[in-house]
Amino acid sequence: MLAAPAEHLPADAGWTHPTGGFYVWVTLPPYFDSQKLLATAVDRRVAYVPGTAFYPDGRGKDKIRLAFCYPPEDRIQEGVRRLGELLADEEELYRSLST
Image: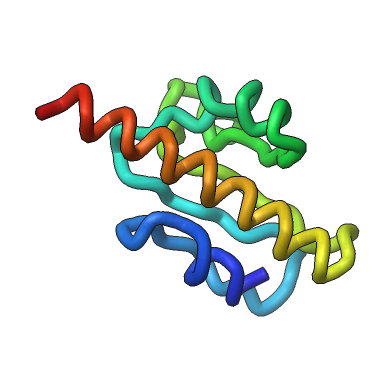
């Protein structure tokens, strides 16, 4: 799980490096809204938990939680690749509209 984000996620994303547990927390650039992107991600056959589910005050829009405890490694790699493609498309759209 920890190699896939470095390969597929935006260069300015960050993620935790857990020594245990079941999840990796990803922090995206602030212009991403993980809650709004979830339906599109599911359409691309990848899922995550938006960070907003863990903040009672609505924060966490730029965060996602990825599970690594159940899927086999090849499915994790493919899921992170699909997520990376989605984020690249959204980043391109953001940049084209903000210039």
